[in-house]
View (tube, rainbow, N blue to C red):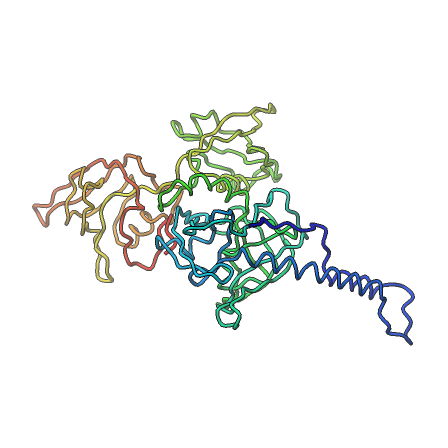
Amino acid sequence: MRAFTHNRNLPCLAALFFVAAAAPGAAAASLTPNTALVQEAKRIEQAQVELAARLVRTYVYIGGGSGVVISPDGLMLTNDHVAGGRKDWPVIVNGRFLHADVLGTDPVGDITLLQIRDAKEMDHVEFADSDRLFVGQQVVAIGNPFATGYTGGLGEPTVTMGIISALHRFQGSYSDAIQTDAAINPGNSGGPLLTLEGKLAGINGRIATRFGARANTGIGMAIPARQIQQFLPSLKMAGGKQVFHGTVRGLEADMSESDGIKNGMEIRSVKVGSGASLAGLQAGDRIIGVEDYEIPNAQRFMGVIGTYPGGTELNVRYIRADTTGSLKLKLEVNNPGGAGFLVKMGKDVKDVTIEKLMPKGAAETAGLKAGDRIVEFNGQAISNLGQWVMYYYGFFPRSTPLAGDKVKVKVKRGDGDKAQDLEVELTLTSRIDEPVPQIGLRPPGRRR
């Protein structure tokens, strides 16, 4: 069992030959290569070959995607969109057919942690300090693009190489992604992005596409190692279930940067009684730092917050009336609240009518019944099915209530002149436990 490391200063062959081609004194009459440079190129090439050979022993085939072993006792990582939909998986590691069980999954961060059964002394990778990565740094990606590892005869994964193109990219639910130009395609999902030291910089998960072509464009996104490490304790203890990110409610930021300077997140308003208010934040404050991260604007603040689990307490630095201060801000658990009922779906459905109540769910506990028609939910008027889907399933995330919140619901019960107007208060449970209606949409916290 080994955790692989390598020389971080390993240059690439292309750079070496660029230097050789540009060397002064090259005579038109002689194309004889510089022996010293050729030998150096061969040394670098051999080092790359040895690095790849070592790292592929930590690679995992899983489903239609990829994974990587991160501990000698068989802990492994992949994407939630690869493995999060079931509890156990057949996997292949270094030519061995094994089984792995899901310990916990993070649909928002797109990470799933699994345990390979009966694993001992497995080859694995260690985590890099992804906060110390830099643009231009060379990285290696390992994966199974378009299932080529299965069809290539030897069953070996694909190794590609590139650089870190950018850091701290906010792409959908990837709030602090590493961008790389290493060739990544469908099938690379869940596989490792590695430094030349052989350490895990991140887990590959997304690619940018154009014109509907699901193929590499030189823009790949990876979830950074630091974010993954922050979720590992809760993933290990999740019992196969989902873990939740943190969120801050009650803050309204000046997204337009009214002062024209990226000098922090300017707070426009703070809701009384919210977590932000109780922590001590006020309208007019300018947040300039979270933990060790500088905060130039609202987007970066949300990006940093998105890398922490719910319940984490963070040190926040701010400026108030030209005075710098700090406070502790505890993140709420971003667990979307569930009303405990499903509504009738279909093209001809107009009213938002309760079709099914979840046993012991919020709606049943509050006295709602199948056949009740929703006319208002948490202060939001509901007049048609599309409006309900847009509101309830989080297309307005700032207004999405969380588990434990109390919301008022207005319904009509009965038909015609006998219809009654009722108002009840629901204490929301977790929406994760509710069935997902087949509406072609993906509620928050679910990826399929």
